[in-house]
Length: 139
Image (cartoon, rainbow, N blue to C red; front, side, top):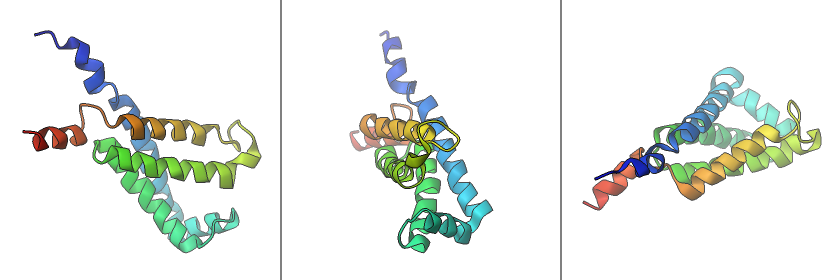
């Protein structure tokens, strides 16, 4: 039986998951290990995020855990939705006034927002831990 037509369905989301997961994992890691919780709190307070200490902890957790989830293909829809909210807040709170283009604009965050919304809508794809769990549940 020829199943070659299923290759994109099974493997097509892997490049997107790797790139998006790695970007969030690295940015969350930077906030955790380079800036630290106090430095991340300071950044969030300066851009007007309320309850900066709590927001910083939530942000770091969302980016590290969310990046790992997307990268590994586990709970991708939920993680991607959380990360999409992260990017929407970043655009409104920190980047909108910088215009569209990088380095001060929101084009990078908008790209990640679109990628996260796609992952939330479509899911991890066939080659993922989510798919493995789904198949085992239906056996």
